[in-house]
Length: 179
Image 1 (cartoon, rainbow, N blue to C red):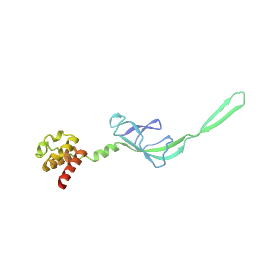
Image 2: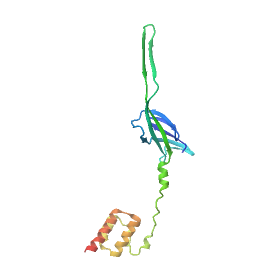
Image 3: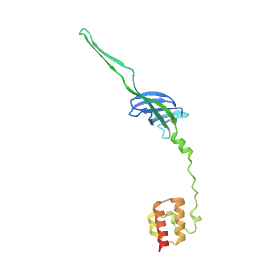
Image 4: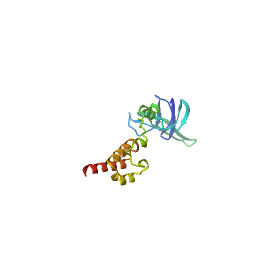
């Protein structure tokens, strides 16, 4: 992404990487990094409104005061004159990166492909095991033979990964081994 529109302190800013800007005072220390909400990201293809995968990272550089604004009051023929001044509290930030920091991390770590073994490949698997619920597995695990329990455990670890079913099968195997 070459630019983004972010929201900081209730105001919207169009930013690019490396850009520095003054925003209303933020309650962050100097050097702190933060991620403002991204309203729009664009520059490469069509702009994306409220993208979920684009992250903007900014760093607080300093806390500053804005220029002094002079305010004067005057009423004619009465001699009334009043002057006051005001300096806004501001924070200078730097935009460190725009774009898929989260997406880059996801692309860098591809998910390992799990081999899909058909149910028929495990001949010792009890009948209808793939459609059983965890409660049915707990109920029936003690009645299966050792080969069936081992095949069901291997199937769960490769496919379902249901913690309750794995625990029930391991308990049934341990019970048979001890008794």
